[in-house]
Image 1 (tube, rainbow, N blue to C red):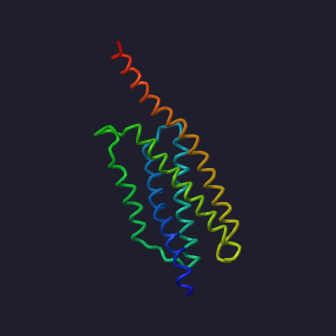
Image 2 (image 1 turned 90 degrees about the vertical axis):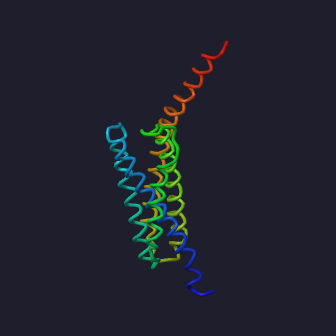
Image 3 (image 1 turned 30 degrees about the horizontal axis):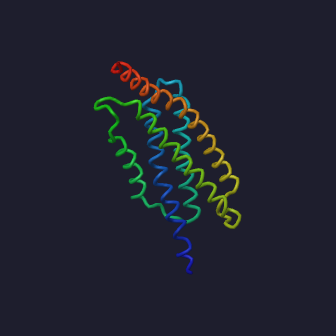
Length: 178
């Protein structure tokens, strides 16, 4: 096998993650802008900053590895984030509380994928001097912190959004019951 053939999966893998990183950073920034007065506003701003930093760290790692950034893929990540706003959410004009839950779950999925990325790179760092083991460990720990924060918010948001929904359903059932 030629060195190019061996490198190709890494190029594809890292560009796939970079596509998601651009979409995730845009989503996190929008969530921070959407909730400036919430009691999680400062945490959302920090999360958005950290996710943007993770994206930039990935670009630096790709540069060190000689992996070209496929810029059309970064635009796909941004476009995907914007297109996700068009999904039906139960309201026409205003933002739905369900949007918060879906966006939170999207971020959680992205953070889980990013954690897997850092671990995958860490697995080959012993044999590739271009990869900094300490940096990858730090990035994996930051992703774990992000996951813990998002998991805590998920309980709060899902309870608020879905409990309200089931309360309305129960009320509707009671009013029609004999």
